[in-house]
Image 1 (cartoon, rainbow, N blue to C red):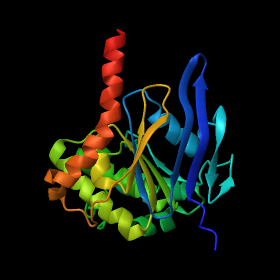
Image 2 (cartoon, rainbow, N blue to C red; image 1 turned 180 degrees about the vertical axis):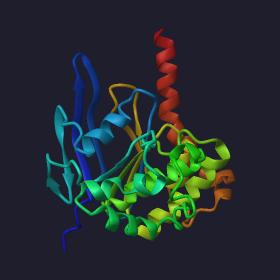
Image 3 (tube, rainbow, N blue to C red; image 1 turned 30 degrees about the vertical axis):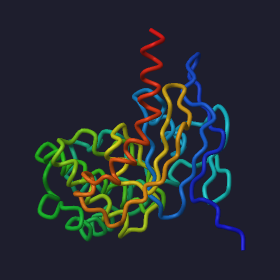
Length: 259
C-alpha cells in the first residue's frame, strides 16, 4: 500500500514582491496530526509562507498541495492565526470568538452556544461578556486561538501566536497549546523566531535562511511526549537546539564578514 500523502505539502515555492525575492525553492511537508515549526531570522519570509498556504497570496513559483492535491483556492480551507490577536474592541469575548462561525453562515445564537461549550477548556469561562481591553495578554491569545479552533479546520497555521507574551505566560501557553493540539488531533504549522519554542512544541523543525528564505535544514525533534517544561534543561533539548542554531549562526557570521 502506498504511503498516505502529506496533509500539507509545499514544492518549489517562490514568492517575489517587485524587485525583492522573499522566498526561493521552499520544500516542506506536514503529515496529518503532526506539529511542525518553521524558524528563521526576521524578514526571511515566514509570514509570507503562511499567507500563501492560507490562500491570501498566490506564489510566484511552485505549488501547494492539500491532501495530495494542488489547490489554488485555499482561502478558508485552513485556519490561520496571525501574529496579532485582532480581537474587535466593540465585541465581547464571546462575540469575538464566534466571528468565523458567523461568517461561515451559522446563526449568531448557534455560534454562541457552540463557543460557550469551549470557554472553560480555553481558560475563558466567566470572561465571555468582557471586552478585549479587560483581558490580560494571555487571555487575548487564548481568545484568538479559540476563534481559530472554532472554525473547525483540520490544518492550523500559527504565526508567532505567543510572541507578544512575557516569558512566564509564554511558557505556560506553550504547554497548554501542546495539550490542546494533541486533544484535537490537529495538523499544525507554526512559524516562530524562537528556537526554544520550536524545539519544545514541534515534531519536526524547518530552518529558513536569510532572505530569500529557503530551507537550509530539516530536523526531527526526538523528545518524548507529553513534554514537561523541564525538558528544556536536558542535554537532549540542548543538542537539538544547537543543531538548529548552527545554520543560523553561520549565516550571521557570513553577513558580518560581508559588511
